Image 1 (cartoon, one colour):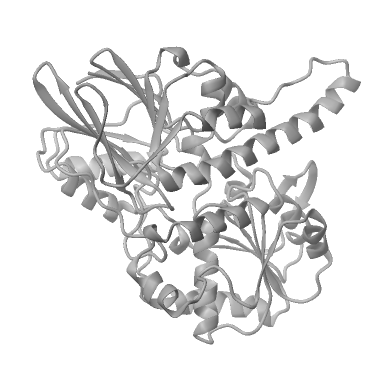
Image 2 (tube, one colour):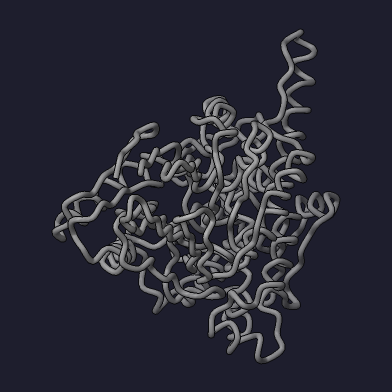
Length: 465
């Protein structure tokens, strides 16, 4: 068996891992590289393998850094099935269409300038038509149901607790009379977080490919999170400011809405309007409502059993129409605007940042991770001047980061995952989906626990098991 690391290696985005065994080639994830636009565009366009040679694909979850290059994969010749959970299929229907729409829109805008300059015109990585064709290859499966995808190769999807439908992938491979249990963690969620169930480690592995996004970070205890969140919001409301939150349309937005609903029910917040300004987030929330089988016990106790919608309450407005979005630019008084994208690399959030980032009464609240070179990361890291939609802005608004809202396990959670998944310390562990400052300290911690074979592969590296 060979494993080739094709993306999200010593970086966070563009997850792709290729397994070659028993004459079959199986790709796990096919995500978009995000970051410097020109560099990312070239990486995404030039896949490091022949798509027509692949026999199957396994998808851990719907976030675009894991799923976003699938239409291009199929456009380039892949004809096999894409196995994933049923909720992930439903989310990909929305996520990939939205991705294609934004690409077509961006390319159209850029090509107007290039045409005037007599330059060659760009093409989008893929179109909405490509997405429609790609969705025909998806096959939704249930959690914990073992499926033989090829003779001697079975797959089971196990709840990763990261977002709706997210899964760790367990491959059981019989090769030359020997059975190997290979696991890919996908993105590992955090225990005791609202809405979805806690992550379940993959059991008794011989090989583990594991994410490390927060490999050198520690989340604050949940004990006082509600009080801190309410305090931060109340402070901005009292000074008449607006709270602008760049948030991923899948997972983060629903968690924020859930927590605001809870705080209002507990009378910890005053009456003020909250807007979710993202057509994709609106549609994704509908998918969440369609999959209550993924919810945890707390969500049932607090909301479902009381006939309450966790994602809807009187102070909350979902906006789809672009004119409704534009009206928020002139909204008077305090409010909260939650808008995509989480890394502030596109979408309506750019307009809200441009409109609010120079007012010191306002707050830009970051509710999770942002990759290097993204606008969100630059602001989080303290940039005083940024470029938004082609124009310069000075950062005068208060900047706040709250890791509580992150859907990734921290170092403590990742180490527990390793202990549970790989009881034999002579087995192979490959650390992916993490930048060096996060992944290398995690590697050292795992080695210090007595594990012998802990690797941090580079993109393009191939190993034989």
